[in-house]
Length: 201
Image 1: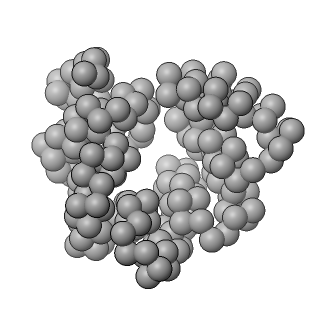
Image 2 (image 1 turned 120 degrees about the horizontal axis):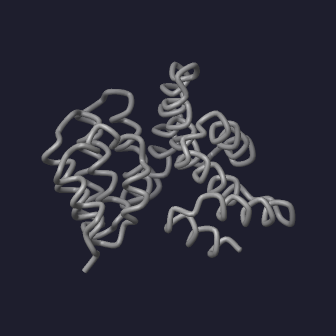
């Protein structure tokens, strides 16, 4: 069921993904299923609903840096809760740092740390973590997408588009790129429009 839900999300069929995930959670709740359900609502721009579920995820697995970064995003895009985003991102950074003390070559922890540091305005910290992550996983779609998020957050459009193209070429979902609110400011950009309609080689 989880694979079917992820496929539906990859295709942008969020209603279908939500239905599959709700059935899955009724049978066997799990932090990852809750996260995927929250992501589906997030991409539908139902931020209140997404954030409510992200909160449940962190409560059920409070030491997962990815879940706290997701919660930060939920807060960030919910206007009345944006001030809570900083604390969630900082918690994500703390947990990612703990993981990196054990394994400095953990690309997931580096990616979470890089994005979260960008979101709290620490550009140097974000780029340092990103550089380490890219050296470890130079072709990883998630890391390439993280690079795009970070450069976009600091208003660096050419770099953002370059990294988005690399992420899409590496297999990152163009539908997810389209539906990620961070890139709403690029919607009128011809290069961004071309990226969304291009075929992955």
